[in-house]
Length: 101
Image (cartoon, rainbow, N blue to C red; front, side, top):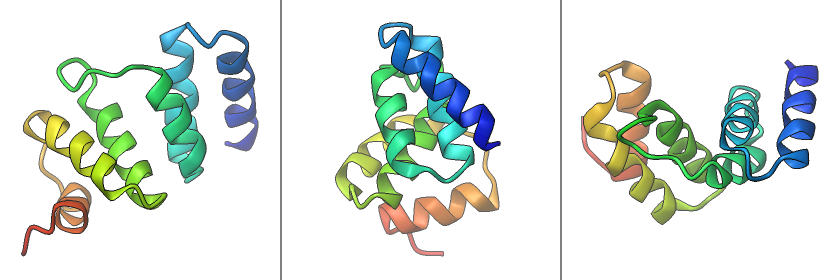
């Protein structure tokens, strides 16, 4: 996974205006728990919760994990209506939005 992250990061840095490269680098960073890079690249991707709710959720998680609670809340609220329920999602909703069990 590390070599995938490195390759995606290099490509995204070489083509910062190419949104699919930013999405790929951001998702790779998210999957590797590299939260700061996930925020960097997913922010660059200018995501829409309507078309990419999963990636916006990844951004919410990454922001939460880097301490940006308000940014995390904003991203999660925009993506939440379009996400399939899961225990993983429920855990982050509780942590980010403070929703009780």
